[in-house]
Length: 205
Image 1: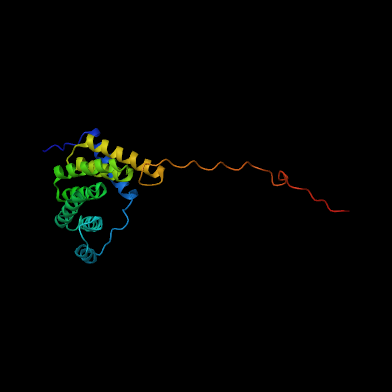
Image 2: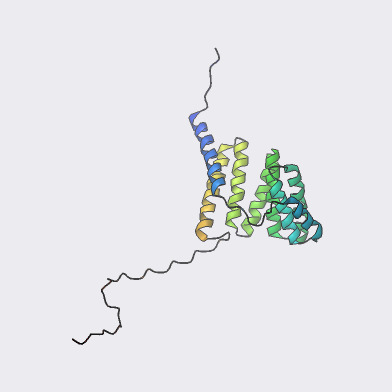
């Protein structure tokens, strides 16, 4: 009779915890604005655009939209975007393009190049002090390690992602900017307490 071998409790806990982390992050992570769903219209914009930052943004939009349904095409558009961004020496363009390339490789199961491009994207976003997108990259790095069964590295990356995302929310934006101090509350005053400096008026009997 074959004996059923159960996973070690610690390893099982790591698997469950990582899965919960990934699912929780996917619920609260923001979606980058401006990503259109109409691929045909985006293709027409690409045809009319020159090799400028607009074309990079549109190519990345297409790559992002196709990541799940057609990762091979997503990889092609992301690579085109990266080529133009490198010619323009656009740090922001290179950051978006490398993340889209990493995401396409991830969907294709090519975890080594996915990890390499995602690390490049994280470094570029760090140069831009873009905490939210650094957190996004760390989340993807965590899922890559998780799929490779590198659970220790996955936990470290996901924990870092949560911390960065919380910091970005506290700062109120994508950039690392200090939150303004809240205004001091007005001192409490009894409803029948006279206002300082106000003149009292009495009616004649």
